[in-house]
Length: 214
Image 1 (cartoon, rainbow, N blue to C red):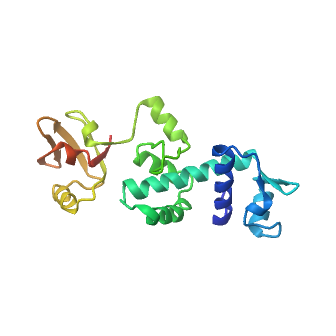
Image 2: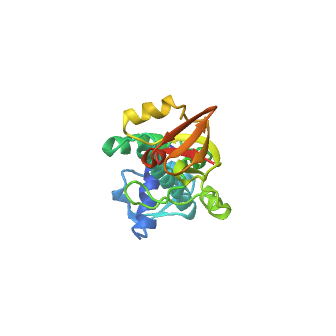
Image 3: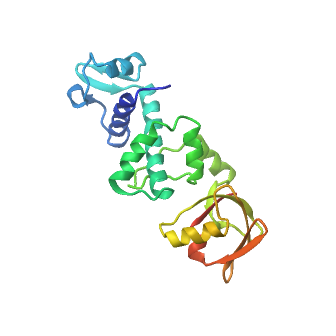
């Protein structure tokens, strides 16, 4: 189902009110719409909301769609912070823009990349997707820090999570780049790994900043 961005924003607000704040309905004057508004007609025509006596109710179909929208936004927030190191209002603004691009399928890939996070950067619950449930059933946690691997484990480098440019440059010079294969050789007293035909040693703190898809 492809909705306009405004319709998604309204559903997101209504879902939070109903599912997280326990509100059964919202007064019509509290949402920035009138019955003549095309967005209002879009939501009612698709049977996502229902209006009775000036009260707006979220229908079951609307709850399902709202849940998906909230999930996409909170995944986008995590992506901005965990991968792109964007914080504060800039992160929220970028997440708002990016969530509309996370259609079904793309959000699953982002969720897997982030290792199926359960909360947003602000502690809000991220509604789990089928990929999260499948990861729990299979024990496949997707993307993990290099420190979670055992000697001789291999994987594909997903991303580097560091705000230190010198560390980033050092790792990149070693060939630690997204998409490259990495094999862990040793974990103590330092982490030794190979990328291609070369071997490198790093400390535990740096190893935690390399994320690998097993």
